[in-house]
Image 1 (cartoon, rainbow, N blue to C red):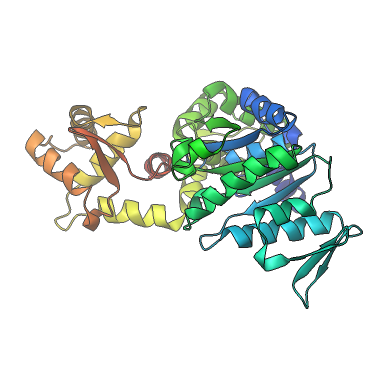
Image 2: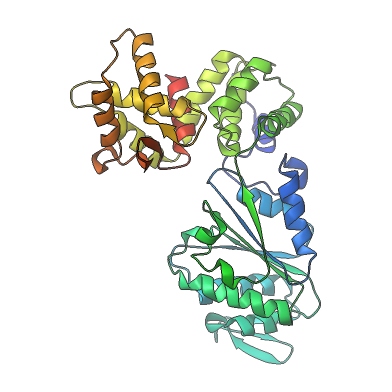
Length: 381
């Protein structure tokens, strides 16, 4: 039977696949990373960069780590400039202090403590003038990797340097998808004199199990040990995929009015989760695995890569696993030459470059979320 509105509310409390976590009580794991960010906030002049793959929970970490202090959250759009980021931050600061800071929409200006500043043409030093002296404040610049204007990062570095001198209680928390802090900061890492780097890697099985255990308590249902293990493997250790899969598998069990998630619920949950993932991932997968001659070679290679734990996959191991899949499906194995040609084609534009060559004979999925999607897609078929 359809789940009730109350059950839907419980589901959104138990798991958050589509929105960052805000409440510390809902956040599981990442204890050392949380402590590093919180410690930086209380250290005058120190700023933070949180980086890692998409789907690892960077925004949730930043939300929870800064929840106990006054903060401004600024989303970085692709066309953002330093001036537009400062304007967004200034208007959010004004909303927090409406009696001390006044915004005049007609003149597009901000007044505070006898000073009038141009809201759309703020410099870093002007912005610092808006802030009340001696008051702690965090500014979270989220999805910094989206910004096309790389010169913006240099301006942020200058703001951080000046804040260390003139407003030591201001903490900038910069968040974005990147393999390194310097990659996120567009090569300006050395310009940030006081910066704490907090890399966010994929979650451990213990942390992921903790997310499921908390969800069980909220929903009053059980996933069972075997189902939990399978879910953790399918999620590719990404909290995003685990939240998405858990939501849909639990929903399937609740539709049956069952108190335990069965393997059948997990299959239904995987189907729903795969359909709910960003359409670009689905399209790329479908283009990559399609064959003009009806061959399954591309699908088997992609499945083989997705079944491996390592991010970078050796071509020999890929070929071996692809042929194991072929035999399990009642087909013949394929020569290394044919497999090699097929995997090289998976790096081409006509296969949406689903795979990238890292070193000679070594490949990885180009999109960090692709492996988890492929695991969902395979499980749901």
